[in-house]
Image 1 (spheres, rainbow, N blue to C red):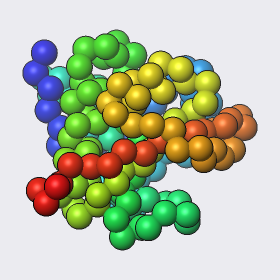
Image 2 (image 1 turned 90 degrees about the vertical axis):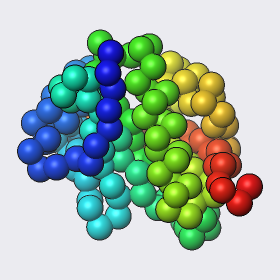
Image 3 (image 1 turned 180 degrees about the vertical axis):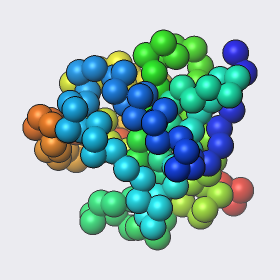
Image 4 (image 1 turned 90 degrees about the horizontal axis):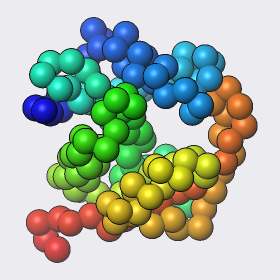
Length: 158
């Protein structure tokens, strides 16, 4: 498999929505319809395999009010079509997100994962993230609990 990452464009929306729609159980129809990239606050990227969009990633400054937003970036989302799980592309995307956040001057990365997403939580823990004790309720067409994870990023200075 040949994976690549590139900036998301408006032409990618149909494929991005198809990936989100393939994640049955995590997104309702309302949740899929609400996916958007607010280019004022986050950057969107698509993951491709031989040119086909198989996932997407969004990053930006952390949205949480209890952190130092000048030093804390956020992985707003990493989503892959289920047929691409456990093939290394999630690890690739997470690593790229960390590098991009560090290159933008952030020394800490945070992300939110659904409490009941055991597979996702194990993935982020394997990537070096740890739950930091903060939770929140979110609405993806159903009320769900999300858990915040954080990780110190490797920067050129340290």
